[in-house]
Image (tube, rainbow, N blue to C red; front, side, top):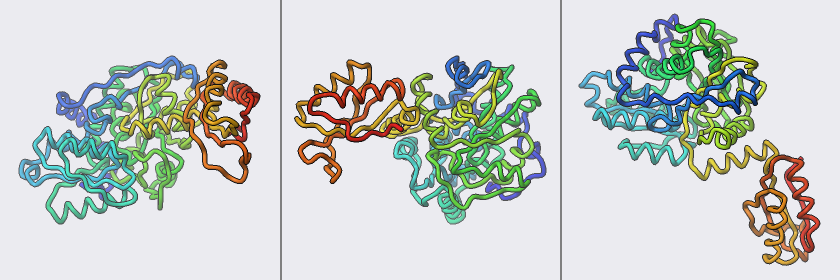
Length: 418
């Protein structure tokens, strides 16, 4: 299914009965993921309570196995024999690949060039053939459709498919059971498959539950679509959250989102990185940028959740560890808890021990020490050194920098604090 035919209403796409059948179908394949109640995030956001629905702990590291398996399990045997093809920024790829392995279906996955290496490696590890094609997802999508036509494969859409939406809706079924008195549920929107399934279940459970979609500012197509009453397509996307960097909703997801989703808000890339960082630090969980978007909305002023019981769907955790380190470092910089400084050092490298002592004696951390390339702005008789300092906040870091600047033979030439 390619999602080109727009249904009239949400119920013609998926019903609670469809989601219930999907849950039975995937029960021995997909995990029931935990909903972790976070006092920390409740205090930070002003909510009465916050539950993190941890789909980063799902098989393949995201919710995508739910919808992929549900759709592929219901394919006719002759279609299964021909094999399937899918396009994905990474998580749907792994879901389809694992479903194919479990069901004995050959799978080919087309991914864009921006897909993290960890996701490509994991997809191949599940036995799929991976084809890297296109600078953005839309190009990969078009190429996958060409392969489906040329090779006779069945195309498994990443979001605009009734079976996929029903499978993703099982996340909502679990939220209803784990957090029955929830007031607001925050869900990231890429193409809209996850929020369509979740909203279907939640609104049937309680029409007063507020379902809020979250998109990055650089891929914010859903809000304009709802305001115009028709699908709005972006000409380009630019966001750190590559997992939800879609350019548009399609017919089925637009119908459900338009009818059942109460609001769509946007968050900045900086807010997303802060959320990634705080999820690692306070919730002790590794989350990819797309999965952190709902928490970014929770912690910013994007949505008012004062005194509400809130669930945030943490949709995935597939990220390279080196990339995660860079993301959290950037997040700490946004929180003014990490500073990069350029030092002029008279006695390299001996004096670095003195610098390290001054930093640790003041309760800060020294990170990423390296000799820097000299520029015209550097002292001609000193060695330029780049360092990273981690502290509890801007005032703390300023005190640490001042202490370093007072050391004999060491001067702070510049730093990144405002």
